[in-house]
Image: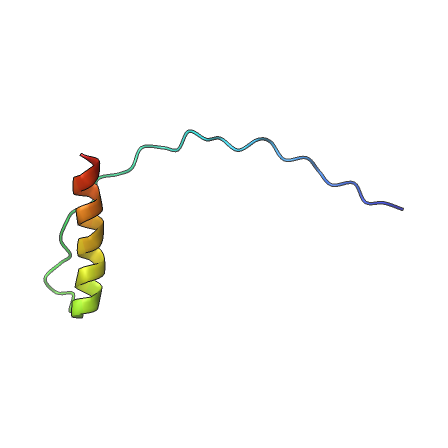
Length: 50
């Protein structure tokens, strides 16, 4: 006997608006240079979108 799969509703393509996040992490966080560069790369991407 074949098992019927339930049909899923189509995906909603309208994503909620992105939240603005602070561009800096708390001073208490000790980040490596690699971690800081990773965070900075997102800040650069956000600058390109504006």
